[in-house]
Length: 320
Ligand code: SF4
Image (cartoon, rainbow, N blue to C red; front, side):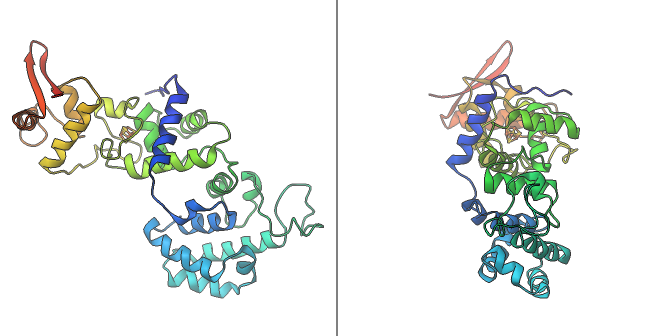
């Protein structure tokens, strides 16, 4: 398998950014560009579901609203907070506290800043803005540093995490290889737009291109380029088997209508994989061609679609 990034990168970029800006999950850390708040959210979400992080994040910032407040806290208090909120390894609390101290004392930042502190009051308490410098903070690895650089300073590189790999593999056939993923991710990201881009591609992996994809329901903006959507093969590096798929007949009817909305007409063999990842024309029962004929037959009876048998097979189109 080799990567097939569409030639028209700008159209791919614009489609994703427009989709993200139209609607996305509203997490509180997406409404700020304060590096301290973003660092707290990133460290918390390393091991905890986002829905649970929201409450802990709000409580944490009530207690220590600024980086200097955290630096001034007793380390034991921060660790207790971490345990009380079930946020995973306590070392993360210790590192976060230490990082706050590093920032407050001006120990990190550009190489020309004096080690152990700054000779200018302004430099103390300021976060570095660059991913490499951010990695000087205790407990901050390349991923977190890049996230803070992107979301706080719009100064990051393309994020490559499990979600992003899944999207790139399915959409553009990027092989399961770290160097290939990195190269494709960098190639796709518009210059100087790491904040919106990284948010958008991670949102795509989170709400549309999850392990069980929701291409049509989530209105994925990459359907027209996506190889998985075209072929019906939704496996990915973290999804080695075709993902399980559940849905009622009503949901499948909706999927047929949405799939046809993007095409003048589709043959049954093209329609099946677009509505079920486990479409198996030769099988019997759920997911077979007979099952699909029954489904589109019902929709035809309801006046929603037209079904035409021809020499090349059966074509289905929306009744307009
Ligand atoms: S069309 Fe489906 S499989 Fe392809 S990128 Fe979008 S959500 Fe993922």
